[in-house]
Image 1 (cartoon, rainbow, N blue to C red):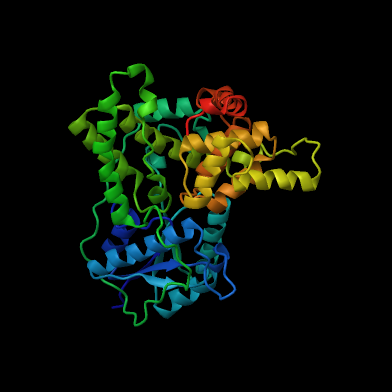
Image 2 (cartoon, helix red, strand yellow):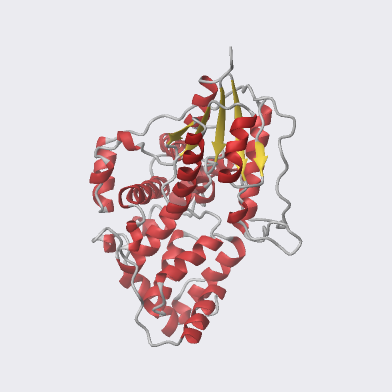
Length: 423
């Protein structure tokens, strides 16, 4: 009898824990073929033909894929590394190894969904099914208290109804053993330049270690300052979990239940509350993309009216990118972004406010630059946040969450009284 082989196509889901796709593939097959594609169209190359990993996000990705391979090897598995696009290489893989079905996680942004559609069409010609899984959100779409088409565009309404009427499911357990399709050569990682000392290290284990280390820190910071309740938000830390969440090294549910356990141990505090709020914002932006598709932000794209020549415009944009605007807060945050690939959410709002409302440059240029630089780049969150800073996004009451006047005031203070701005 012919055995059933399932190809597990890893994308932004680089983990063993809480991975329904992997768990189901193991349960429903005789053997699986885990695969990751390093798509050449996603990378810049040096003159020597190496992937340019001076960008922190590329280095973080390579570390995360390597960590996934190591995790799979520890339970008797492996990860096939393909240097090529899924569209070019998937059909031949399916035929060569007599694959019965392909599993993957569905994405929401145009570039990613186009790849899925192309692969699905190619597999359909081979009479092979591409099965879609959803594993990037805290709440499964089928568990929401409304269908996708009726999801509230106002974040406050989405948050209230979802928290009240939906439940967060438990995490799927990590598999303990894997039966593999028989392969002689599991592939090599692409030749790449490397950073000497990246600030954050990619991979599931590093993500879990970072997550577990947050709670005592968060409780300690809050306890030290809880007598100043009126200023509690000043003592909310930046968790820096987003890089591991963006690549799926951590699942949102893993973070959620870790926070709930920490609340039982340390009590509630704004640091823990903000972690869950961040997960809700991630869900909101992804579901907005799902509901509105690319219109989520293209409805708000308009020509910026300014008197600058093309040369002057490009010069001002370059000053912003290089952290050379003359505004200390903006320049400080942009320098940090360029060096590490990460700045806090508040910092992102501030530099975006400057670009759009002070320099009056096109927000699209800012969003594209963040896409290039952010170690935690996620299409829905990046483009959604930029659109909201520009003109309120789909939420007409976004000013409740983003206080433009406050950010302009911070920038004004920096302009007229630099000593008043925190270093």
